[in-house]
Image (cartoon, rainbow, N blue to C red; front, side, top):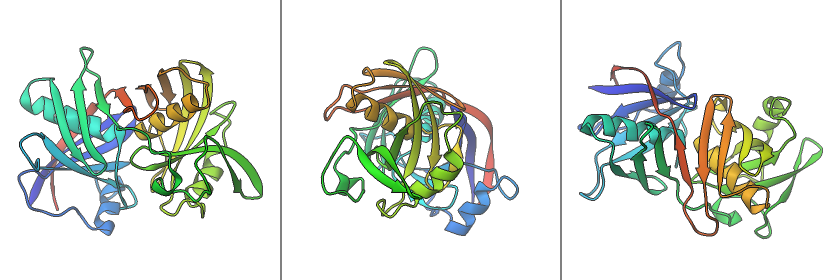
Amino acid sequence: MELDYLIMHGAGNRILVVDARESDVEPPSVDELRRLADPTTGPGFDQLMWVTSARDSSLDAGYRIFNADGSEVRQCGNGVRCVAWMLARESGEGGNLRLDSPSGIVDARTEADGRITVSMGPPELEPSRIPFAADARADRYLLSVDGEEYDVSVLSMGNPHCVLQVAETRAADVERLGPLIETHERFPERTNVGFMAIRGRKAIDLRVHERGVGETLACGTGACAAVVAGQRLGYLDDAVTVSLPGGQLMVSWRGGGETVWLTGNAELISEGSIDL
């Protein structure tokens, strides 16, 4: 069966959106996903958003998320903006959308400038729910990696994140430390790794090594995690511009159990159909 797809990007994060709402086809196998993710054998993607029909009338659609290595994950901030863009184009209206994600209901709206804002839910800070091996919840943890100790923040934005503060993102040892921390024994489900340089109370630079993908041009949940970490340490205000290699995102959070809001672009690259 052929399914329609869009190749999109959010701040440079390459997203394949497959519309499976009118089909009972199951998502591809791990091997098939890896072939689709490889641009030499498929359309290529960092994440695949598998869009499903809504489970009740209060929702516009649902989605599942798969990384380039075939693993299924619970949230993707740049990907959900692309799904919202597709649905808004279909209806011919911006308006508000409610989407069913693996980590809960996501609200989305199209801004006047065309950017899309999505609710990413409140951050999860309890170690056992991230999950992360720690004796007690803290704003900072010491993580031993390759014989060195690193001061890190750890939280979940629907998927686990470890955030390190660095002086300059350009000089950060992402290629070496990213895989080592991703697969660290204290992260039983692996983790995304963010390298954050604070540029003032309202701006940070960020590079992200994504779990199951490697370094990408942008990571929406990674941007949210970095801002939450910086706010909890007292370094950032409640609205922050995040500059990533692929572009800028805006993250706002009022603290506590409040939801984190993510605003950014969603750009169409190409579209077609694929026989799965």
